[in-house]
Length: 176
Image (cartoon, rainbow, N blue to C red; front, side, top):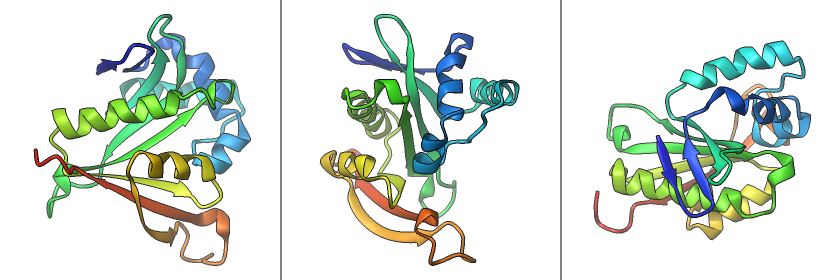
């Protein structure tokens, strides 16, 4: 995949992305807030990265001018039956050094447009940990509606760090 605006691109991963990928996987805060794999060991992180190189629906967010990786965005299938084939779940994370510069907003706009226009999706979902306010605000700003909250671990229902908020954006332009 390669979609872009004037500033960023969403593209398949390339070997040169590993340094930024490793910054993300070795950052405990990124794991705690976004759920990205935490792996401080560089060799083990490289093994994870090798899977991302071939993983369908996971892409690098990069600067268009230099192709420098800024983060990860995913548009994962939610299932293939009962109408779920026209829905996806978006996930995203931007490396700490590149945060608060509008890159996540731009990446989400690009992937949402791709999902609704190119893939003809009817719905795009997003889940966010309850303690991660920044993406919750961003999703709401982009038109997602909060739907419900659920625990990732039914054995620890009282644990806030296991709680996810789910947001939904429907294709409202009538192209579904």
